[in-house]
Image 1 (cartoon, helix red, strand yellow):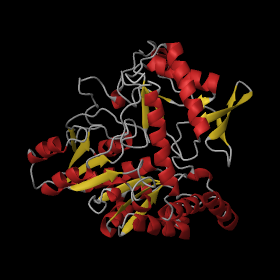
Image 2 (cartoon, one colour):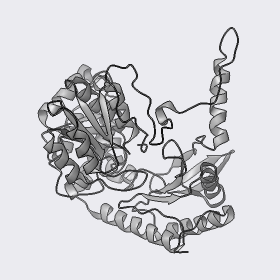
Image 3 (tube, one colour):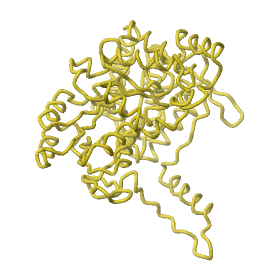
Length: 449
């Protein structure tokens, strides 16, 4: 999933499309990003020229996204083959969201292969019209048990899970107000935008600011507090108990996005809330099947009545073809495995700690992170892209540049995600390559150098 997005502090209800998102300095945010391209003047607009000029403007700023053409090889993760200019290059992938390597775990691939042989490819319909396979029911039961909840509901992606669930809850609760952490993910923001309800933005991880905002509103109005556990660009972790305390004082539902934490933290991989002993408190826990669990899809877990409400009123769920049974089978195998194995989590934490220590010792500007996310600051979009290109082209090290609008301008970075399968030799290659690129581009060093 993507990172934070600038948000408008209050979103008046009833205004079609809402107020454009803006940053703290009043500059446009991701949903009203300025495009310095004027339409062609004439009898008709030249649409293709407009599209091309807009993309050229991204290239000029160094923010144009180039997709690495990769071929994952079963049994060799995190090594992969890169196809470029008719050639094949072997690369170390250091930016995968397959955090634990479960996408190539034999329990997962075996379950998917068996499901294809037994049930074929697709689900055959929406969940309501012939598309509910028995494995969907089993997966939802397993996810509910993982989070000690009455029920769960699966979606085709974590993004759709957030947009559908948050949008449905906020839109249908009468005169609701949503309170959103300032660093919340785009999918959460789009759910709020779709609902067209009033929105308040509290400062990132600031429970006192949330309390002040809620105290200023009508105590009788329904309220939803929305935040994440692990924030994927800085790697910091929310004060879940404090935020739940504030929400409880004001009679609010709590909506916790744990996509970067499920499978990774807590007993059985139930997430940061469970790790911290507050897993029972959020009204909604949202997770993904596409990161630590290594497949694709998203889900929510909560009370039986809440889940049934979203199942019954969430249009994006109702009208979308169900996940293929093989995907659900792979996810089910991953969840079951990680509920009973700590080996992957323990090795993963050791690898993340080792990489952070090695980066700091080399004087590379690794940001403080309380999680497995390892951001290395560059601070310039063009240089960030150039550093990424040199790592890939010259050293076979793939770390995707993270630029605006995913992060704020001036905080562009390389985001490294170690896995349990990155061995010491891979870490050595990473540190040596980064050191060489930093030297060549004359990028900033930390005080540890």
